[in-house]
Length: 257
Image (cartoon, rainbow, N blue to C red; front, top):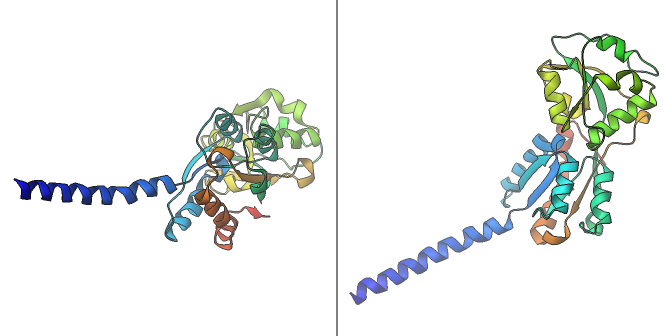
């Protein structure tokens, strides 16, 4: 009996030794809240980080507005990557980010798209006849009251003098990816999304690109969050700013700052 008990103790000790590294690995995973438009790109960056022998980050993708409010409510994210500076400012004003870790990472462009099965004969410019081109159709954009892509889109349409003409035709989506989906399913005759989103949607066609000066600069800032700032989060942030990650961002069509 004594021998059996000794073996059992050794077995339990061995199991505990095996379990400890797994739990440590779990603790090392970094939870990143990031804008929906970064889904494929950051997943690829996370895969590259894991391939280098690091714990693979865990991502949660949604509209920047929704993520910022979740962080404000206590969500345990270690890093936030926003699709605009305004939502990062929102968290900064509440002292929820580590100021020294804030950096503008990427830029993008804004495009008008249509379903591949529905033509849209219009050229983007001052007072361009978008409402007439839509006819009875709808225009899909992320909600301009809260979602960065929608804010950029509304700003561009206002600057070009056509917002009032199309406002009643707008479908307000909860994220830029939802806005894209309306066009992919041909439930909207047109949509305004980031160029990087359009590049991932073969069922859509780009009608034109909005001039850079028609909307605020599209900027993707990132920062670590105060409650979960640790060495693992800082290591992944450093990787995101390195050449391997920059190559991935460029591959997906982002402009690297």
